[in-house]
Length: 146
Image (cartoon, rainbow, N blue to C red; front, top):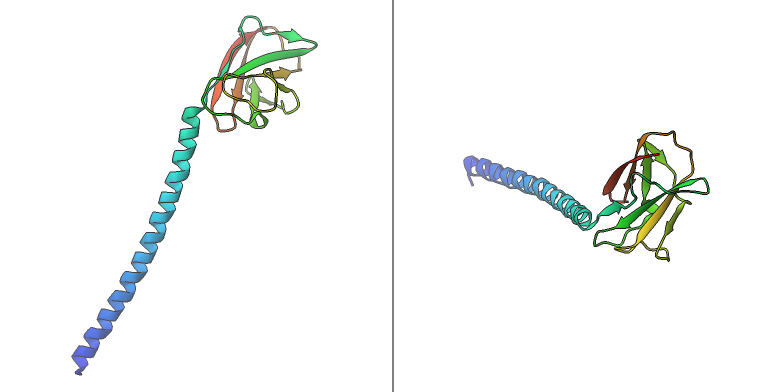
């Protein structure tokens, strides 16, 4: 074999090695993008099937035993985890972990069930806003007056 043939063989083998390396990197990136797309599409599908609605009358928020009572209905198609519900009054986070009750009984917030959230801090007279956020980020906001 001549020197020229050996040189061409070395270049050919080098090109093959580089091509295999590029294919490995591209395949890894495509798999990563595919996995990310699958996760994001599942999250979006969950959000599209989830809906909550604060069903209080904004002019008459019930105030019972030192608590404001907010009623939130699961108007979506998904069963929701009530332990991941968050509430904000006038933009401030309110800890409602031990202050919620499913009005239809049980511990699972099924579609059409109503969740009662209690807020025990006195509010000044005037306009306020409550926002309730489900675990997957779906929310409803209600402006109200005390």
